[in-house]
Image (cartoon, rainbow, N blue to C red; front, side, top):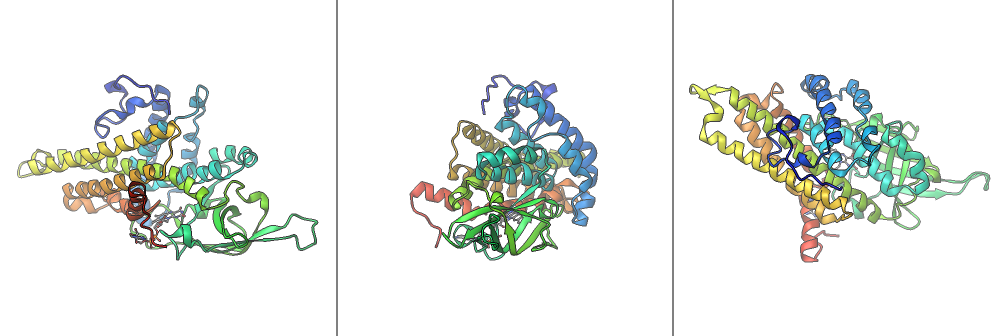
Length: 411
Ligand SMILES: Cc1cc2nc3c(=O)[nH]c(=O)nc-3n(C[C@H](O)[C@H](O)[C@H](O)COP(=O)(O)OP(=O)(O)OC[C@H]3O[C@@H](n4cnc5c(N)ncnc54)[C@H](O)[C@@H]3O)c2cc1C
């Protein structure tokens, strides 16, 4: 990122009048702000009216998918004319989506963050040339399939899905194939993906490798995870892989061990920290609007000292989270990527998110647990974000290892 803003954003230009208290958006260019403004208009007009209904049904509003893709948010054409879209733009794009709804942000980030990062880090130059344009325009939709039913936090050492290379059975006329066996759990967006980016352990050398698996292959079965109480709109799948054949051309050639997967996770955790910041902004803004309106004891709730203290704490959390992710993104723009940096950002923003959404729910009272108020959705959805992309404990252990030099992971 080459952020050069030196002046504050004028009041008329501001996208975030309250939640971005220290004007981090001053780092955005006018063109970037315009793209985000278009996204804001779309979310307000088309998405917001559907959120409560689809959350309750536990379905993703598929009618939003195509128009969201058509907004050309990943590498907006009119930004890339001058320079590639910058990290700060990508961050605020995630922030804006999450400020409206955590499932929408997660859905978009599954492609623009998880899958795109898998291809950027894991694919060879030649593979990237073929796939990356299709990733960016969503004509190749993919998901990140790492977690397993028996291995979540300990996936690095525990990953048990296997990949076995089989020579061509016809004696060399073809090119042979990899055979994958195992199961994956929690995979977001799998049901509508073209390919699943599956991580499996090569039985020959014991190393983790990555494969693009055709989601519709008969040896692949998907089951929707039912009964979620968080991120209900986002669909997660339990996937079974039973002797699935994958050609060598569909293996990501730059993934040769779990170290390469860790490089992907580093980038993804930063995206999730932006999601945690955005959720807080959405919950805080909804709570603030409510307490200004709602009257008790003949006065607005917002005029009571105890309510104002909660508003100030929420604002403090949002501001600290935003400052943290902006600085992290700035560092990454300079090429500095360290596990402990993104782990710290994901851990701390998620911790503050939990407090912020709880305070937002609290000041909205009973209405705060109904879908009629946005805070109920944010409150419930924050729990999934708290756990995915490395739980609080795992991210804390990554930071702890960097601080002390001692790994507290037990293996
Ligand atoms: C909504 C949602 C979407 C997701 N999407 C995806 C996806 O698209 N792709 C994908 O691959 N995965 C996905 N995940 C999986 C997610 O990354 C895992 O849930 C996460 O890594 C935690 O694993 P687990 O749920 O198995 O919990 P566990 O690993 O079983 O952990 C349970 C608890 O024990 C704690 N714990 C574990 N080990 C230690 C330790 N050594 N010390 C202290 N505490 C410990 C954890 O912090 C946690 O609190 C998703 C999860 C959710 C909930």
